[in-house]
Image 1 (cartoon, rainbow, N blue to C red):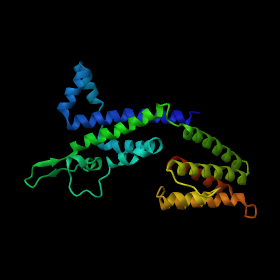
Image 2: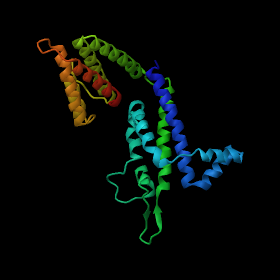
Image 3: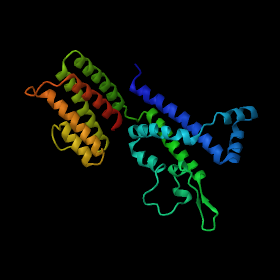
Image 4: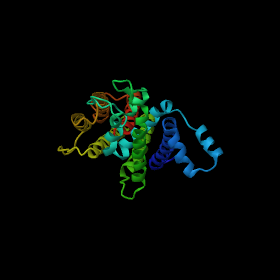
Length: 270
């Protein structure tokens, strides 16, 4: 089975390749003359240049999926650059006028064109080409960090361990050991929430914080939304049912829901 380290590396390589294709496509669409000048410096064969142009894809049709995948990678590998990455896409709430410098990719997707009072063009989708280039550069910097000897891979190794532990929890539940399966899944959830707190430099004052304590801290520090807070609270309730024998035995479905819920949390909250 492919390790999480290999998976992230493969995902990064694929995102960078598709990002390069998207950039070439949008660059040629809005700056065809400049593109031709640049490409002819590296490719002398006209037939190959035409073949390259035929490979171009629609930025409008393919950007959103690229953005969503890249967002997950940036959250995990470069959380300190997440806001920079998002700002290049989202319209600034404080924006009072639209200029070349604050025209974003979301404007391009809506084909927004701004004109002066005399009707002359002020700024349009071409301004977002450089914004996308900066997003692509951030993704490429994530690859450089990933490959750097300074990058701490303990989170990736921990993710491998979590996957193995959840597989064990599934097997326990399948064989009728619902409490055991739920307890294992609960330990994984607790360990992951501790890691998320560490990632965001959240100070934990309680000696042995429970899932509910960590969940409350993440909500208080605006790391998770209320919907995720409630979902984790629900998972914690199922886990508690496994730990206290005075309670009725949890059902196989409840443990299945707990395991699947933990899988969702460790893959979406960092």
